[in-house]
Amino acid sequence: MSKITVIPMTKNIGATIDNVDLTCTLTDTQCADIQQALMDYQVIFFRNQAITHEQHKAIGRIFGDLIIHPGAPGIEGHPDIVAIHADKSSKYVAGDNWHSDLSCNAEPPMGSMLYLHTLPDIGGDTLFSSMYAAYDALSPAMQTYLSGLEAEHDANPVYHSIYKDYGTAYPCSTHPIVRTHPVTGRKGIFVNASYTTRIVGVSKTESDGILNMLFNLAKDPNFQVRFVWQPHSIAIWDNRCTQHFAVWDYFPQTRSGYRVTIGGDKPF
Ligand code: SIN
Image (cartoon, rainbow, N blue to C red; front, side):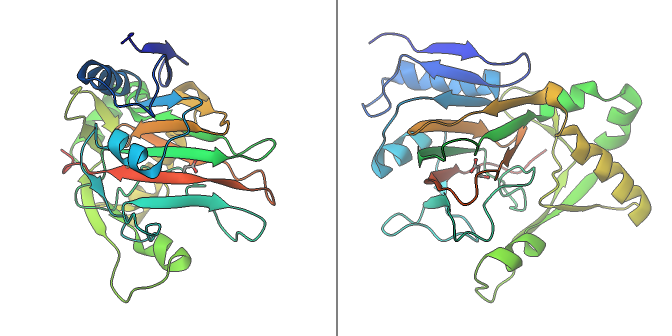
């Protein structure tokens, strides 16, 4: 079995993985190399991989157990797969704001894996931003200030407007603003414009001002990679050190596929 090929896409984030067929059972070496590529590049991309739901879940499980989304219902027969779909009748799309998936959870997911089979003629790209690079770009004084702070991540404002209300509250959790990656040991910014509502223990004025500055870091092109999808492309990203933004510039065309979400642990 030949070795996977890893092709970096930018200096800070993103790599394309070639020379592997995800519709076949992977060897231990291939799994280890793919895991290492995700740690090195934070988001990895594959082309021409027409995977089944079972293959999708099997590849996701290379990284950990799959979790059930607390808001979006799973597809029939697969509670751990959510459909990512937009067409001419869509009123909203998942992920068209900067975010790290489910940072509202007490143990936010380590990663996510998105497979798209249907794409618009043009558009529907996904942007990914490195929160390592964002942290590294801050002044030492700002890094020190942030290192003692925690922020609240609340799904309720987002999910009550888009998902059916099951009568229970959606997750809301408090996490450190500067997160240490449990595998690489690198520090990254862990607040995002979708879920993070306030910094704990400071005034609203200070919280709003600092969060706004941190949210804007994700928009800096220096920290980003932009993925142009083709049918049967796959992206796997590490939610502990990245944010992403799904661009909805293709209405009324159709963009469609499936996502699995991989469990993580409590941020520190
Ligand atoms: C998501 O936030 O998981 C959706 C990403 C995308 O559709 O590109």
